[in-house]
Image 1 (cartoon, rainbow, N blue to C red):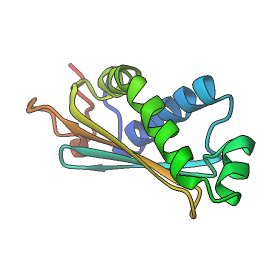
Image 2: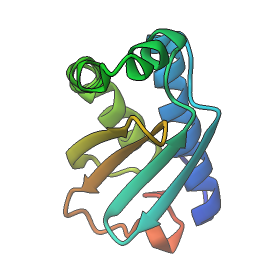
Image 3: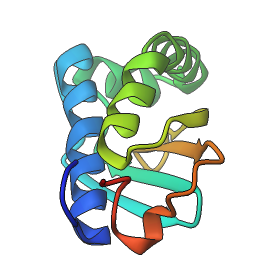
Image 4: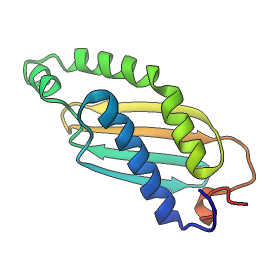
Length: 128
């Protein structure tokens, strides 16, 4: 992002990007998402993430299967998530982790940023 942007704008842009990746690749995105910027960490918390097929499998006691497929799929999209965050904050994440909770119908995407000089909590997002 260029220019001076607030933490809230950065967080919203990250939420939108992560939801967009989910929507594009799962055919359905989460209905709620909120991103937290804390020092060099970014956590995107999403609710209502599962597809109808996944919910059916979870209700049938196959939550571990859903978890395995989701995790495999999420990590195959690792570069998409990392590039999206890097483009928004101006720093490349050096770590990406993804997790789901079948009972709560929630997921998180966690990013740890590289050692660049920009602190995302300052709201400048790596702007020049």
